[in-house]
Amino acid sequence: MALSELMSTVPLGMALIDPELRFLEVSEAMAAMNGVPRDAHLGRPMAEVLKGTPSGADVIRRVRRVLETGVALEGVEIIHREHGGGTERVRVYRASYHPVRRDGEVVAACIYVEDMTERRRVEAQRDAGAARERAVREQALRETQEAVRARDEFLSVAAHELRTPLTSLRLHLQLLQRQLGISQPALSEQLAPRTQVLERQLSRLGGLVNTLLDVSRLAAGKLSLEPREMDLAQLVRQMADAFAEEFKKAGSELTLHVDGPLQGTWDPLRVEQVLVNLLSNAAKYGAGRPVEVSLVGEGHTAVLAVKDHGIGISEDGMSRLFGKFERAVSERHYGGLGLGLYITRQIVEAMGGSITVRSAQGQGSTFILRLPTQPQPQAQPAMAAR
Ligand code: ADP
Image: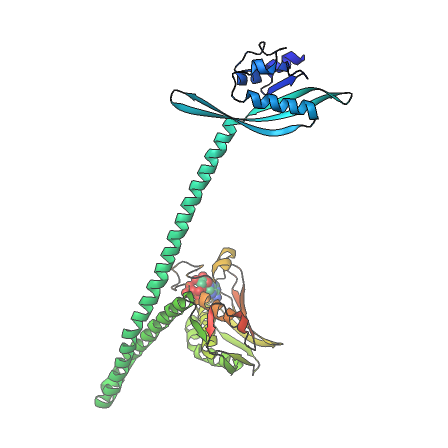
């Protein structure tokens, strides 16, 4: 292919300039950019051809520099503003200037010009789109944060408000039982099953309110620990006894592997709360199958495992279930707020311990709790030790 043929077809602005600053060759595309026919370039001085173009003088200056120094100039941006019809049309070009050598001597300069207008317009559109998307995302994040804050505030107010009538209800029920027992013992005996139901439901309500209180305290970083010397083995045995009835009702046999004692410094009420959560989950999600609880000391760590053979947890469920309000089962089948394991993890981590789960769908679950026997104050980000 002859050079002139190439020049008339190549979609790139190209020109070859001799040392006297005359056009030796020019591509059709470059001619179009200059607004001068290709033939009108050949053999003519740049100054004459580019007289009417907006950046002609700059181009000539750069070509001269390349011819004199032999050093290429890469990626020079040229912006043309064309006015017409009351609007401004901006075109963006990117030019490179290279020396052409023969036997080491610069004998010509080559100009390459790319029209970047369309690419810049697409980039600008993309940037504007990305900025819009970012703004929408940020707005959604702000709204979510506000919704979460409003929820936490509502929880806190609701939990505190619910506590007062609940305490009063409990007190009045106790009073009623006492008075009835004195004045009408036969009737009191007769009503005992009903008052027991009332007591049970009240204590369930109390448990739910406490859970909500814990969540709002955690959100405010105000859940506190009261560590003291205690025997974990004894507490585990006591809790197993307390849960005997519940496991019986669930049709699960509870086996305990605990060699006592296992001394350490923990908050007994908070450890109890953790045990209540793990045991009631085992009874709920492992109903009808055996449950095993084991406790061993490994150096300065107490390791407690609660193993059931129930419904198990999917992989997706396992990654979420220690989160706030996260559940891996449908509400229709199992009631619950999805807060127990969240609170459990916060308590355990505040004590410098950890809780992990091993499970597979349909194959039971094992929750493993590791608690250091001595307090780890540095590991209490969410709670303040009192
Ligand atoms: P809740 O039981 O109130 O839903 P939790 O925070 O205690 O809340 O548990 C979160 C979720 O973890 C449960 O909804 C359930 O999907 C799953 N889960 C907890 N314990 C078990 C278990 N022993 N077996 C199977 N799934 C469990």
